[in-house]
Image 1 (cartoon, rainbow, N blue to C red):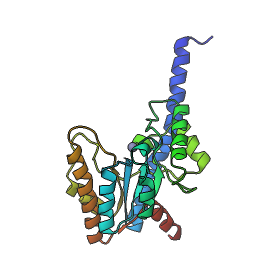
Image 2: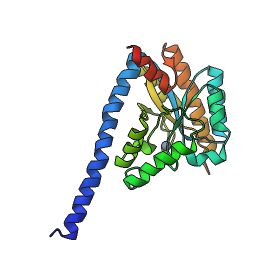
Image 3: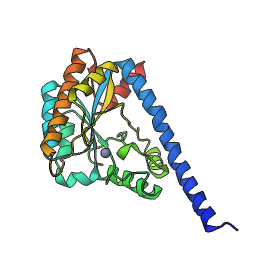
Length: 239
Ligand SMILES: [Zn+2]
């Protein structure tokens, strides 16, 4: 008969294996993504965790001025705070994609909870998402539950190649991020457009806006093409 300790150890090992398998996909997919952006000489600006009633319109303004299309991975739970924003993003020509309902960390919840979070996020956005709407995993983490929910929808899962650092305790300089994009010959840049609470809110917003603008300008100067994630994947069909 198995002791409780052994049962516990087996359960931990099983959950670990179930989490590792989808995550291995991230390592392979990120490597492919690096190759793809380089080959296509493309830069994709991607904004997670919005919509932010204040910051998202400011990001939109920069993108409009620069004539650039981007991808926004929205959280279902933020929609009540900015219900008109998904339609505004679409009307401005941007790509609306999903980022779950409540931003559950797939390694810190059950597979079922992660599954539900993915499904509820798509449901909250269903009026605004096309049938092939893309998904970015919260915290860049998947487990067996979220992986299954995404497979059932045949949803493309998107990672990134360059973290702007806009959620780090001390963000890097916007210039260093723009330089890295150019040095890498393209990239998928992770940024966040939710409205932060408390101190440092305006500094963070300014960082996001400045990084967005600098990445665009430096990329244009270097002859790189800017577009949404679906543009990047569409273009690979011909190469
Ligand atoms: Zn996120």
